[in-house]
Length: 561
Image 1: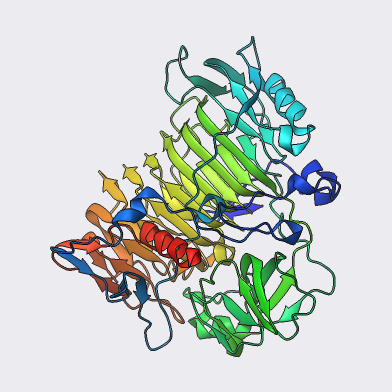
Image 2: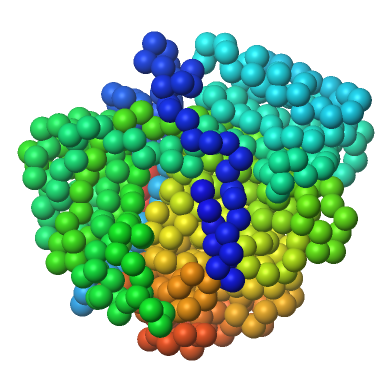
């Protein structure tokens, strides 16, 4: 799996080669409990799928507020007389997407407190093998007997990579502070293999969702599937079942690229290189109408190519896995040193996973990166003090890459990097929420980075002392990198505080981007041409304060009926 930076360079992201799902214990049909437990109030579907269920967080009690004095609402998404959110579409059918499905088990479900099953204390020298042995010992147990591998307070030397490849395993420390007497500190030493990831959560397969059931692919016959839709019509639904994991693909045809004016750069994108991919489960079937678990984040227009729906054969993912309460301190020579561990945590090939209460220091690529994974929560994590050459393909503090969908970054802090909150996974990324993130000293913009990421929400982000003029962009990146072009679509800035600098939001062909309630300057004038997106700002307090939380509460109330 490769990721491109501003200069078009590439960097290897995955340390492990893709493997057949059938070789992994949690993918075995002999262990039926390997499928994830469904959200509270939901049902487990056949073949491991889950149907979202209602769990109403406490903050929903105040939404919408009874007293709305001194508030204003967007014309695009607002509370109706019945207290439910309503959406207004433009003449092309574009509307603000529904982000209320992002996060662990679709959001609205508390991260689990997983019981301890193994304990490791600091040792002498490299601790990688001892910790990995404890993880591997838990991995061979029946799923119901797995749990947390706890690292006692102290300092551990990690000269390799720790891998949590099987379902139901959590790596937990004593705290993410700098005091070895009370916290768990992983000192990532050396550079073998070159620019490795310190902890990989998930199967490690960057193609975890790519194996399709033979003969299962059917055409989508709906003429135009609009943003926010969950139900599509297919030519034949007889081969589908409720609970099937499915891949919804919109091909990147010459007709579609032509409708985008080539993609936004001086040369056109190449047909077939940037297909839109949505990873979903079948929620319901009615004749030829198939309802998916999560809405779509882009318009699927048959005039630009026929979309297809295929059953995924055993996704190669680990479920109910996480990392908690530890500090990852990558050892470097400082300055522009690049001969060291490159990312602190990679969530690769996972579903219903989390990272919380972690501090990551001195990475070159990312503090936390998410690839080929869905329904992931990253909460209360700090990614700070990166060490690398300040140039392309580096310093993406919190990054989503190909196949990252329904991902929630909540209450995270980024410092000193380039693109602090970024999507780098082209048209295979959607439904990603950055909520209440804190960004200090950013050297480049948070953004959809390249080639049509859909459905990004930057909700209540605060910039402090940025070292760049454009701190966030939903725009045309034109000839940057590998013809990045239109880098995001159907994406939203909601109450984004630009820290005295500016946001650039432009409207791509066939879509829209939004800046609602921006604190500071927002403009349509970017580094490459494009019309301005949809801007709204008024006096008083924007209601709701968080779009994600309002949409989550609205969904959970709707499902409870």
